[in-house]
Image (cartoon, rainbow, N blue to C red; front, side, top):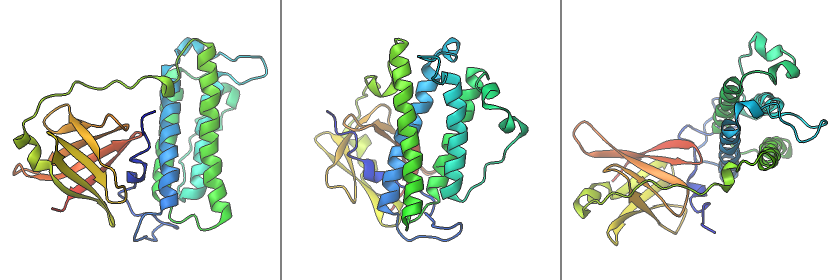
Length: 269
């Protein structure tokens, strides 16, 4: 089994985490980082799963008493807005379409259902970015309820996909891009420290003919493989890095992507 969660603690929002709107926190909360990680994993898998199911199968259900694929999609959209609006102090702007019966929304075209679900997942990303220390059992329970809902529905949809002869996203083999050869001189400018947020940095080093990255709260480094002169990916974890240069050509930072989220980190030395 590949250590896919090795960089899990690297996940942190570039925006300040807040317990209430406008109340900044100096450091990211470790518990919230774990919530963000699993929300990214299951939210991304759900969108990918719905997107991979053919449109003509959206009326499928294993038995007459179960929900159809289309019904689950619209239900998840509604649940995401309801739960994430609670802990994120955000309000989803509704339209008359939101008030339509579930049975009507379940019949919407696949593209509409997937787009709306994706938007609700992005709403939850923004909500999680605003969460500070959960602080009390009720807040923690709401976060657990949200993530359990994502995981439960992904499991449900995975069963549907297996019955339809489809492979769920989590069971697909990862496809790596071709590795390009770069000389040591092309890698050297990327060596340094990159600040993701106050108190949490990426450290990029060069050895064994390649680049390696770790965060300051993880002891193990992961090798980065080049797919272009500025884009790199990891084989041991599901993550990739793009180095950014300024107008003068100097490296000014990087963009770190993992579990569907992209976060910038600025070069500090």
